[in-house]
Amino acid sequence: MNILLVEDDLNLVDALSRMLVARGFEVVCCADGKEALAMSRHRPFDAALLDLSLPGMDGLDLLQRLRDEGSRLPVLVMTARAAVEDRVLGLNSGADDYLTKPFDVEELVARLKALVRRSQGVEDFRCGTLRLDMDNGQVFRGALPLDVSGRELALLKALMMHPGKAVAKEDLLQTVFGDDGPSGADAIEVLVHRLRKRIQGSGASLVTLRGVGYYLMDDALAERQDPG
Amino acid sequence: MKTVALLRARRWSLWRPWRAGRSIRLFVWAWSLGLLLAWCLLDWVGEPRPDALLGLPPWLWWGRRVLAFAAAFWWVLHQAFEPVVVLGRELDRRRTQDLRPVTDQQPMELQQLAGAVNWLMRQQQESLDQQKKFLADASHQLRTPFAVLRTQLQGAMSGQLDVRETLPKMLSTVDRSSELVRQLLSIAKMEQLVRRANWVEVDLAAVARDVVMEFAPLLARKKLDFSMQAIPVRLFSDPWLLGELVRNLMSNAIQHTPKGGALGLVIRILPGETELLIWDNGGGMDEAVRARLFEPFQSSSGTSGIGLGLSICRQIALSMNAGVDLYNRIQGNQVVGVDAVVRWPQEAAHE
Image (cartoon, rainbow over all chains, first blue to last red; front, top):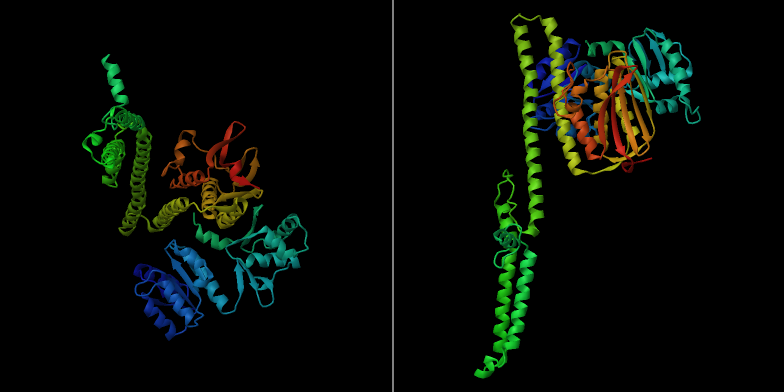
């Protein structure tokens, strides 16, 4: 994957680019906004990692220019400015995702990969050994399709499509049962109980936040983020 | 005899109303009365009028008299307002940092004003002192992790510390200082929002739910058994402030609960108040440090907390007329955990 890394702190560029290269990315580094703009016109990239405080041209301006020129390059913004967070979060900034500095490199790589996959139309979500294939709506465990009922599949899909995020109980109820489903949350709890048994040992665990919602955890990722 | 005379002199003076305790009103009143009497006296003893004797026109006599009385009255008012002008001039001349009290040797009518000004000055001084202390503490807290990092790094580079063992420790040092920076920024944002006081109706339960969802990865990683029981409660507040309040209390509860333990969040309405309760099973806190925990940079011993979270919570709660408190929860003669409780008075909340 071709990545354009736009960042003016050379220490960060050095460490980050080495780590990305070690993970199989091809990285082109730029320390300047104008240079980055020229570079992005010059050759195609799969995604850009963009710092917001840049010499020459501000990161948000650069983003604006890119989008004005019709570029659909997926952009992951890295920001250390607290006040900017809200503006980046607003959809009109043109950023596809953002991370606040300092960030976890594992998290950065996971988001970057997801971003590239999404932009290439390969909408597959992974958690542990589970993989959601968006083409046929099937969930695979390794190479084999997971044996689940229709509603269990709907539930699992809803959770897998929000990687790293919890899903509210009400939203799940709506997704799985639709408008005229059972009103009690017990129905979901029963379903979760059965699903939990089915995905046992797949490297994904289904966590209940009682009274709030559910969360699908990638065990390996959690282990890497929390070595303690 | 002498003291009585002195006391009377302190009460009011014919010439100077600006001595301590004298009444400006009495001064003006007495002089007005005196001038009125003088006017009447002139009318009464004035016959035959000197202008008539000299054959001057009557308007000249009247004109002089009116002018003389106006001048006298102007002098009275000038004297009466002199203390106000003096006080104003003194405050005007002050430098911004000069927070010494103004003299309370003021006429009766100005004593309340001087008192209020001095109260403000004292408050300002206190908050300035607090800021100074905060800055000193913050600088200590910011420098310490860098000192730790530098030592660890030098140790690892020189081969005196085992690299594999040192690096994870350095990572946790970095995380700790990032959290400190986040909290310091959070304080700045909180103070700004509290000053602006742009309150809107916020659903506490919805805010709490969002915060819990944010914490989902952390809760899952620590394999914590979490539960939430909440009824919708509308509060007049700012969504970010309310979120920050819940976030800090949740973060504390998660930090203190051991892996696999239980914690929870309850929102309920009690007679006369609305309550947010976040309970954990972290083994409780030392009663001796309990009161201190709400001060900046005070954290319970043996934890890696920075000690700003609860101070932020208290300030946010204060801005909503709410109170926040910590209690040890006791089961069977044993402290099992902490209940963090925020209470809003009834009028602040409505269903």
